[in-house]
Image (tube, rainbow over all chains, first blue to last red; front, side, top):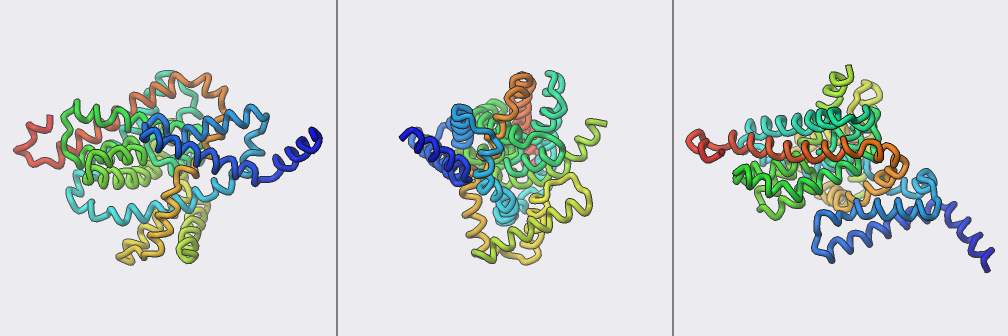
Length: 240
Length: 119
């Protein structure tokens, strides 16, 4: 009996299906817990799934590369999904007609602040170059941030985790900070949430009203494009 | 649905090719996103099947980050060494970005006579 269980395990752990199934099931479970608990930011399903999977893999002595053989089928869809971001961005384009100049200037200011302040604080606190480039795109939506990090020699997996933490932080503290600063304009509120905290911030901006949510979504898309173009230039200048 | 998926994959492939051919440091899928965006602007509308496929993919977007996120298990030593710069940078930079973006947008989008209220 013990032998057959062992041989079954050997069979299962060699097929990509096991880790593909595990990834989807853990995520579905994490999302269910998140919804039932009333969607608190700190119970973010991606973060919880990552923690759970790392724990399971460590306990079963599974290497990341053998896990990834199964999980790569999910991972592969990240490319087409990034391309698909063009569709919501296009549909939000009419928002640009209101205050186009104010929008673009604020967006650029926010985008540069996000990258430069992240680099500066991390550098002052003693971060390595690899950690620096992994954290620089932290305010950009995850698929774009991971792509940027990978292209510039960072660690995309570290970037993914940092991006999600940034989203949680912004969603939790953003509304309070904007209130303290007296920023009551819903366009400004939405833009700030979207530029700093991408999709997770946009999810929070939904509760600040329709205008804030729409501008947050627009800000997220445009900040992804802006950072993908600006960061390689800034990084070249930073390391030279 | 299949046509839309083909469009998305073609844009990504073109994006990757452009990035390699021009030696750009920008991610291929982001160039693909730019191409699709320009295509939609030229066309003047987003076809419904494409909108549906995009929404289907983006609706499950967060699941797609999980496999890569699990990769942090290979960098636990780095996290142990660098947790202080990483967490301080996250906190300061996120708050500063929200403050700067929100404040600049509020100042610029309000008429001049309302500037006092922007403070």
